[in-house]
Length: 456
Image 1 (cartoon, rainbow, N blue to C red):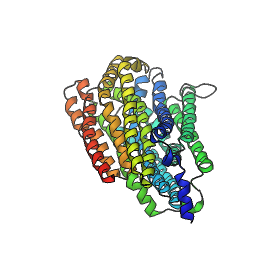
Image 2 (tube, rainbow, N blue to C red):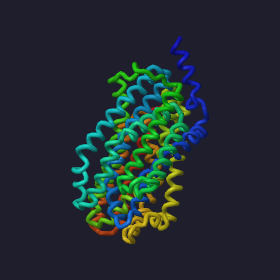
Image 3 (cartoon, rainbow, N blue to C red):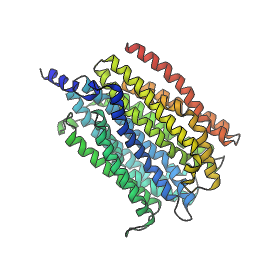
Image 4 (cartoon, one colour):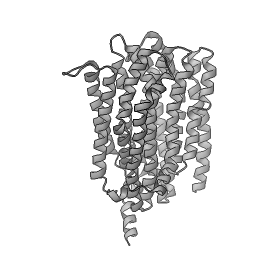
């Protein structure tokens, strides 16, 4: 009897009854706002540190070298969250509420373990990592200060991503967006205060940018935790649900581990790009670092729809509603491609104006404009691939999502980039990325057709 009541309750969840088109929009838009605001964290840091008198280029280079680790942090937090989101949504859709409660409890445990990893890196691994990319003493000092703070105090970043996914898993995207916005606004306000020294604060330069970021992340984390424990009524909390469950953790990482690896490939890719194009010039390395932070606005917006698509498809897959599953796939694909095209057009048209925002040297700004005008031609395929990855994750096909990500980011992108770098032609170098997205699209489309046929 209790099981029937629980299934009746889950059937009232909007992910099982609301029209898919409206549902995707209502869940996706808050997520897009949230994700785009998240992109401000690194861009705002870059904007202000570039204006540190006499040290702008060195500061920008320092943040570029630190960026892959920050992306790895996001990879582990978001990847673990994707696994949590997928298992949680499928459990609720299938009426397995006790399992859903345990998923949420184990999510907190996994958050602590993830933080421990970055705490250890911050204490012992930062110097080794940075020295693998540069021997410049000033850049090493600046990047080391910034990265140690972000790593040692990364608990805010890790846990806000975990709690955010728990809220998204029950369709409470507005709550997650509120927490994200407030944290980002605090970061934006604190950046100039801590970097340049305002209102009695000492001028701490690059370290100030790190402290502003950490404070903003902690605020977002605390708000997400509050919303989860006091507003997420579909999920019960208690000490008994914090008991580690090997089976549930295994399910989470069946989807989450490939998702972590998939997201981590972005970190690996940026690290490899730094090494590959350094012979071209240091300005090219800095330009790509700035470009990739700008691209986060488009990429995170696309992942906003991706993060809405995953629980919608997973929930209805759990309910065995094939019609709504297909609609979730189609709407997610169309919406994600559309948002990437919009950003691509904006970046192409306003490349010069965007480059001028950062006060870069003329050579660095030139590289940045070339990157923006070339790489955007792969944006429609990038949007489709991101949607494909969401569908694969929703079906629990994490390995296939990982393979697609590897094709997008590493193969054939890095071999092509290395070959093109030898020509010293920046435009040709950056064309490696749209080529890879196109190849990945062909693979993703074929596999999507296969997986949907099996679902019929």
